[in-house]
Amino acid sequence: MLKWRSLGLGAATFLATHAVVVAKWSLWFGGGYGGPQKPWFLNDGNGPVALTAAALCIAAMAAAALWARSRGESIRHGLNVAMGATIAATAVLFSVGPGTIFPIVIVFSGAIALFSSAIGSLVVCPFKSR
Image (cartoon, rainbow, N blue to C red):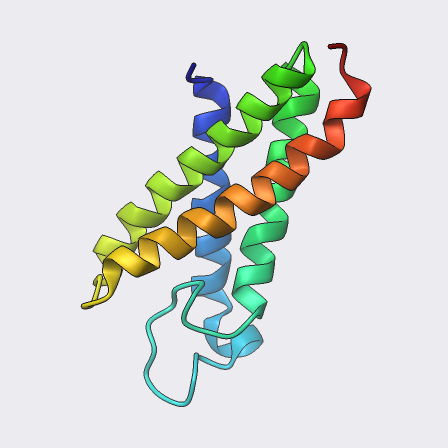
């Protein structure tokens, strides 16, 4: 079942971290691997990936803590945060220019979103009723 607030939170979190990556691309991340790389969180080592994953983990924790009534619902909120982030990442990818390996990039983006959101929602699970 879709949890619209969590879906929107995931999308907003990804878009906000992407805005930070774009704004600080040269200063924090060195502009990518030795060339004119476009600002995209998978285009530069671990920094932007860690920033995005940490933000999604915190967003999933917040969604599960604020809106979930049970452990199962907590996990569903985390999954919805990941889904919203993946949808936003796909939209941003196509606006930046997808390149030839875009299906693989979408899968990696979704995996990072799913893993970090799952961790965030699982942290909250012990504090929720069954």
